Amino acid sequence: MLFSTRFFPYFITQCLGALNDNLYKNVLLLMVTYSQIDALPLPVDLFINLAAGLFILPFFLFSAHAGAVADSMDKATLIRRLKVVELLIMLCAAMAIMTQSVLLMLALLFMTGTQSAYFGPVKYALLPQALKPDELVKGNAWVEMGTFLSILIGTLSAGLLLAVPGGTFLASCLVVGLSVLGFLSSLRIPSMPSQQPKKVRFEPISGLKKTLKIANKQRGIWMAILAISWFWFMGATYLTQFPNFAREHLHADSTVVSLLLALFSIGVATGSWLCEKLSFNHVELGILPFGILGLTLFTGDLLWAVPSIDSFPAQFYNVQAFLAQSMHYRVMIDLFFVGVSGGVFIVPLYAFIQSRSADGECAQSIAANNIMNALFMVVSAAVSILVLSVLDFSIVELFALMALGNFVVAVYVYRQVPEFTQRFISYVLSHCLYRVSVKGRQHIPTKGAALIVANHVSYVDALILMGASTRPVRFVMDKSISELPLLKYVFRHAGVIPICAKHKCANTYEAAFDQIDAALNNDELVCIFPEGRLTSDGELGEFKAGVEKILARTPTLVVPIALKGLWGSFFSHKGGHALTTRPARFWSKLEVNIGETMHSDTVDRHVAKAQVRELLLN
Image 1: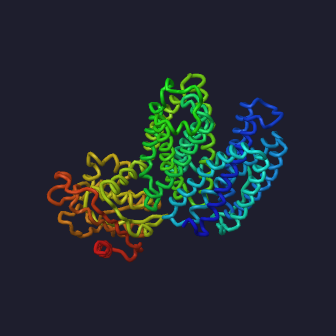
Image 2: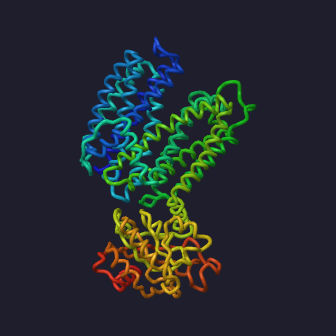
Image 3: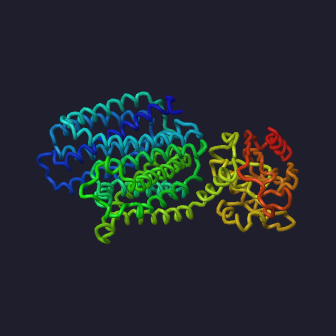
């Protein structure tokens, strides 16, 4: 995938853009900080804060319009136009650097932020069109790795360039050269036509409201946006506080600041790569808690990892002296794994937004994400000022508060979107207690309604099937199973449809079919276990007539699925009633075999059973 024409030219283009943005921004800030500009019209601190604000401001002003534009036209064409704009900006920037025209450099920083605001939505909205569903997580992982490594290289390169004679001239040449290379690579991006072409008007206020409203239509997407924004809140706090943290708590110079930045950025890149491995080629929300746990533990551990101030020497540590002291290793490990946890955290969320956004609205959802990211980064600055200046907390205490805040945010998000909890439980069951392999995942429709029919082996069948599908599934389940003490919370929030025999409760029986009908008409996936009970001998039982009743009321696609390997587990009836015997084995192999979809007019209960039986034998 990486070197395919569908992805590689785009990947190089976006990496070069991130590199150029950060190179130019840091060249400007370093020139001001180290007084390489003769006549500065503002105090240094005010100038730096103004520069940061001018770079973020366009994300508030233009992201809504950028998302609408990206959804309305060919994405490859839009990228090429934006790279031309970048080239023009950087030509002017090169002249501003050489002439030390500080006001022009500030204006161009605003233009650079504007170009980035328009590039952000198309950057992520392109991926669902360019990649196959099972490549989406991998594509996002590569993008995050490339982005953070580009940020790191751009930041470090700015410092190196300005430290050598003629550095400003080299920086001017480099920003132009990177723009040229970015434009040339964009020419190789294949056409990505709009799914819903339309005219777009520039409406800053109403457009922003409309974009946020589109993102808020689906609760899951909105919570994913808030979760990503929280990560950027934490990231912005770290990146802003690294210099003072190094000086005040580590007694270290600017070379150590670069080391801390490198550890954090490489950690995010590593976490993005790890996420792709843990996701098994599909959008996997089940790994999010591992990222959340890591962010909380490693951020909180900094409170105890920082060396005692009594151990500091008279001189500030440079990077060589810092690395020579073993007492600093725990701090470095914590910062690296904060980055790793962040990568594991954000990659599935980006892929989730892309995969769940409605047709023609993906870029607008990403635009809403950019708006909220920018807002959270501004809030992070305000919170840092409040905590450090008003409350007089230390920086490590600020980090500890972020660890606590991370836990609170996680609880809130998981309460708002039960699917995130269900995915985690399913992931732990599928990859920690068992080794589940899935065949034929591509047969589950990515859009629209479908009825899944599966054999019923154990009490955890539904949890295993949750992980096999990239879309939420409504399960039709025996009422007694749906009320199991340990699982009823999960099943209730999964939208389980309880059912029982008609002679036991006619109201429950009829209500179940009404709910199934409503779910299918709402383009949802519904799963039924047509045997009506757990197998008592491991064999496939007779399918009851409920399948035919459902299809008669609501004709839809039918997806047969066979669960293999669960017979004999702690949750099955082998050797006695389920859950009453000691577990005989852990991490055993399970298989979910998904068959090709069938049209309802060719399916009855006998055909459905035959298809599931065939899948069990394969």
